[in-house]
Every structure is written in structure tokens, then in C-alpha cells.
Length: 298
Image (cartoon, rainbow, N blue to C red; front, side, top):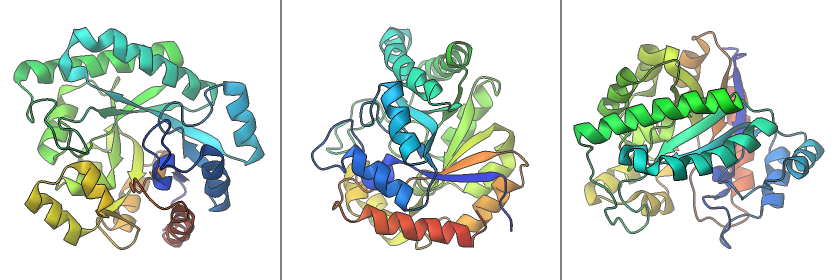
């Protein structure tokens, strides 16, 4: 199948990057060199401050490698209500401004974890109260409208393991409760499978909300151990729960075909969580993954 509506890219996450600055991570210059070498032309910004935040310098670095930004990313805790709005917006505005300056049109919004991704310590209730859920939906709608009005970007909310938007039940409830004009969906195939969801079914049911894709797979054997032991997300990633395609779930060709069938242009950004990882590990995986996606028609 010719997936001519799907634009494939990658992200710092596929190079083991989770933080703006961390000695365990690939230096940003090496990431840019290697993502281009692997055959990708679209990238995400990753955590704000990892790549240069001066627009002129970043554009020069990207242009020299023939790379273009598809989106920026922010974490938010909007379920905590109006009290967190000012601090949230201060961070969002920085990321949105750089994202827009790079010519991108999407801002990926990830809900905050309910437990520490490394230690597993509870930082919020695992389940939202009705009041917290309303704060989440209303805050996200406000964020979507403000980001569009001020920066011309569309927000796409990213369901994520160990957050309040994880399972099919929680994701569909959130989509049903939010305004499609303000809030789009970033479907991460790996996180949705991690939490028991069916990506193809979600695309077919809520296709009009899908604005962005993250391509990722989970190792079913390791996932079974993670679920059995209640392992937090960070140690689960370190154990290899997110694996190189096509070794895991979900099967990506049906997902890509369902997305192509929507008849709209979509970014599909490869994100293989693997923090931390040896510095020489990402490039061969990224190259093989790009080759595999080409064989799928992307």
C-alpha cells in the first residue's frame, strides 16, 4: 500500500533523550547528525533545552542537515486545576514559540505522570475525581484555544503509560468530553498497546480526532512481566519493554493503513523509548526502522 499521506520522522526519544541535559544522553549534535544519516527528514524538538532554543541557531543546524521540525512537546498537569495554569503557560509559551518559529504546526501535549516514572512513588491519585477530570478537560480545551490563537499551532494530546490518559476507557472518555475544534489526538501506538488499547480500533472510531502519530512497539513478554510486577514506566523502559519494529506489538502495517485511510496528511514519528542507552545503540536501530517502514510503503 502506498502510504502517500504519511510523513515519517523520528525524535530525540529514539536516541535515549528524556531530559534537557543529562550526561547519559546522546549530545544534541550527534543526534542531529545521526537522525539525518538514518534517512529521516522530520524531527521533534524533544525536551525543551535539549536542542538549541535560539531559533536562528537551531534553523541553521537543521538546514545544514536537511532536517525540519514536525512538532514540539510539553508535559502538563492540568488536572490540578487553575492554580497550575500560569506555570503551565509559561513553559508552554516557550516551547510553542520555538515550535512555531521552526515552521511546525503541532504541539504534543503529554499529561503528567501519577507516579514517579523511576521510583514509583505516588505523586497524584491514580484515578481522577470528577472534579479533577473536569479540570483536565477544561484546562486542555483552554490550552488548545490559547496555543492556536497565539502561535497558530494545533495541540494533540498524547495518551501515555502511568498517566490519567492511558487505557481505552480513559482515552475515549477524554475525547468524548473535549471539543474536537480545540483538542486533537496524538496516538502513540506503543503506549496505547502498553495500556491494553487497540490502535486500529481507535483510529477507525475517532479518526476525525487524530492529528498526529507516534510509532512504537512493545515487547509482549516483557510487558506481561511489567504488568505482573506493577513496574513503573522508567524501569519498564530500561528493561526493554519498548522494542524495535517489527519485533513487538501492535503490528504497524494495519495501523499505517488505517491512518492512510483517513485521507489526511499525518506525521508518523518513530519514538522508541530507551532511556538510558549506550551511545552507539540508537543509529543502527533507527536505520533498520526506517528501512522497515519503507518496506511498509511509508
